[in-house]
Length: 106
Image (tube, rainbow, N blue to C red; front, side, top):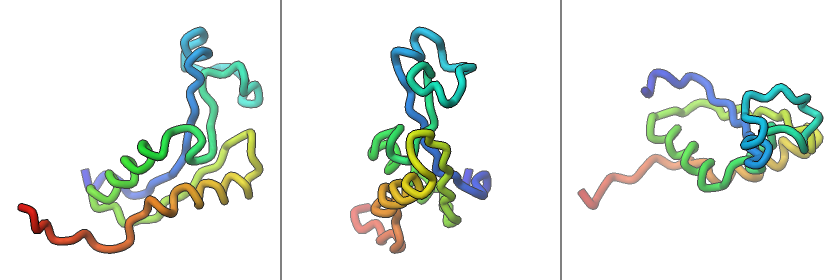
């Protein structure tokens, strides 16, 4: 698995449970019809929870990924600048910079 990840894009999506239940998630509605879609692209942190993103970042660490995290912005509700700033502010505290400690408890 370690050799399978060469690049990581941080991108988020919010699922509207009502619209998805009625219309499904194979979306054909225009991207700008946000209130009718089953899902929409959102700025990182506005689609999935902090816990979900911590699990993603932790998995990247566990498999030894040491590359960049590219933030992808396609949120129709925010400007590119605001979306990028909010994504950086959201992800930055989750990143791990130090090497892991020796497992003294094993």
